[in-house]
Length: 343
Ligand code: F6P
Image (cartoon, rainbow, N blue to C red; front, side, top):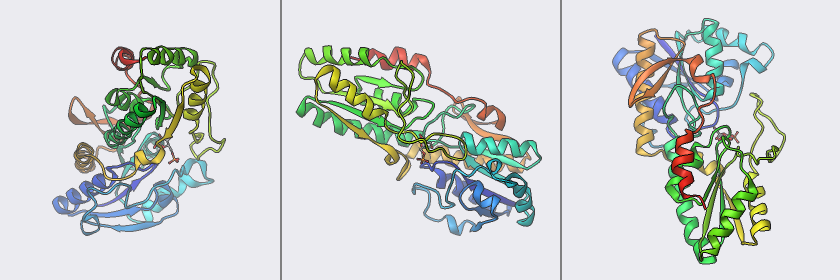
């Protein structure tokens, strides 16, 4: 058996842990051979591979990023791109493909699977917005990085009696914002799921500061939207999946808060710091479990499936279920838990 492996979309701490587990289990237990495709679907479309074996995976468990490289290439948005996929798989004598990615990469995997390509999916995204799995690896690491940043911002905010706006990632869902906001004691958390009223946010902050010297942390997910509709974007550039590059809502919110309250306000945009570096122990274990389960799915011929976490156990779900709709923040967590500490 020859198995191809690719990592697509934004990188994510834990990708290397999945690759290592896939290769170790397949090579040592079943005697399979592996082929690494470079930069996600680009490597498949352009037939660019790299050697992948147990030796190549030594030392990668705690390393962030992906040894295979990644990109946001969409074979279906390239002329004839999708037809090159089966051609490359045939040329490389690939019997099965393990695709590690988020909604875009696995969306492509789901379409290709319907066209007969033998694929097993592994869910990844720091945003934690992929359906059909309780959690994706990378999320826990991103939340820890954001929480550490908030802890540091607290002390400088207190010293200056300032409002600190922290912009975190989260295009469609505010999981990182909600978790890091709860863990970091945020005074406000703005998420894509709930349009925010900047007047109400500013008024709560004004009243909070009236009660004394209170440093306030406002966590904003990059996809958060003001109630009047328009969303701030850094540029109109879109990727091959049609996503606008976000970033900038934190500055907009900070400007409004300062104008409306008169409090000195500063902004920190955490950006790609949240995606870099070493995965937490939790993410390493989850990624390893997913990798082992993916190889078991290949062994069982469970193609068109994605491995997922459900009630603490690893299960298989149809790829189509995973990419149907983004998994958004539980309203109970946001309204009953996080919002208790607003203002
Ligand atoms: O992978 C998801 C994500 O981290 C989003 O939260 C963010 O909007 C996007 O990727 C950023 O993408 P890029 O790395 O292409 O700037």
